[in-house]
Image 1 (cartoon, rainbow, N blue to C red):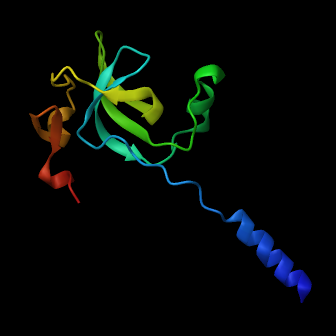
Image 2: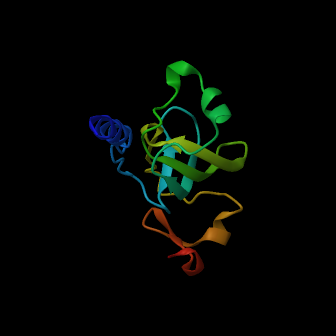
Length: 126
């Protein structure tokens, strides 16, 4: 009987949930990378890292972000092109330029650009 209780306690200890990560940014916010020269509009948020291990390991260890923070999917642009980026919260800040993002996928997800942010199209709201 004592052995069963001991196993039960050990299993409970393994089921401790991670700390709650609070997203600083929201869908439609225009942000810029703190270190790299690109900006974008957020179209999805992961509460913690949810990309491939290969992607994570490709980041140099000295600048590799912690996994236990929100990660954001961006419709991104730089001076050369537009693309989709996946960025940790620690590497983002609000973009203060008040300029819209020039990305071809924006019109399929968002309606208007007002007051420094994009409004999600009605069909994408839940």
